Image (spheres, rainbow, N blue to C red):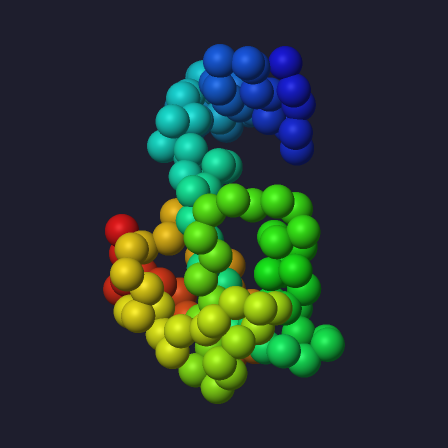
Length: 125
């Protein structure tokens, strides 16, 4: 069994929530399945919104780490201002992605986060 941040995960992909003093069913140590989290924990495709070719770009470093880490699925980069970042062609918007990605990583300035989330939500899956 693996413990992370107060949660315990067994080899059957079941999360055991810690017992607390609160009367919420999720907080009483009830086990729940992780099958609905499969796409988050083991994504088949990714999109990174807001990366740029600038050395200080957080999104650029995220892409570099994804690629160097050996991710094998498609990685889509969304940036309307640049044609390529870390060797990957960019798309102008989330709507330009043919198939909705399992995970969207948002690396835009704070003021642009709500619109990036809304665009990802509209793209849906």
